[in-house]
Amino acid sequence: MQPDPADQRNVLGGPLEPCGTEPLTGFYRDGCCTSGPEDLGSHTVCAVVSADFLEMQRELGNDLSTPRPEYGFPGLRPGDRWCVVAVRWLQAYQAGAAAGVVLAATNARALEIVPIEALRQHAVDVPDDLSGLD
Image (cartoon, rainbow, N blue to C red; front, side, top):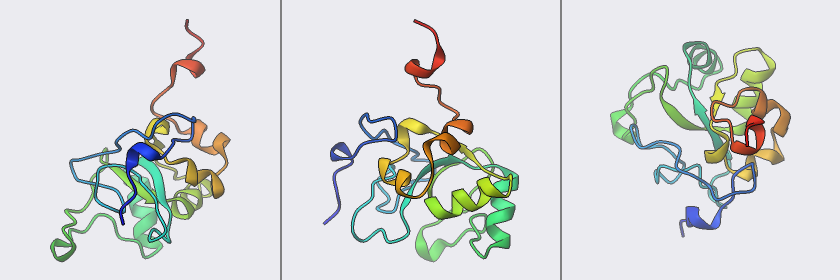
């Protein structure tokens, strides 16, 4: 059974927000980085993919750019939001090719693999509590 995104938390402790619908992302293709027992790869990091990130993924054997219509996958372009496997994001981070991260849409389960500091360094959404503005 597919978990309800409303029951999941983001890395900031709040409700898990949608990651992307154009293209429709998520392990369960619900637009969110929802994770459950079937999601063995932990597709939990809501990334805003860059050309460098996509190239590195292709080199690792994880081609996210090529359309795969048989899986309903349109292929990603720089700027697309996609729920990526936490280990793959961490590999890119360690190699200096990390994609941007939408913290509010990144599942708290990603913290089992990726340190919050690494995610914050590449955050493209700056939550109010981190902005320093009141």
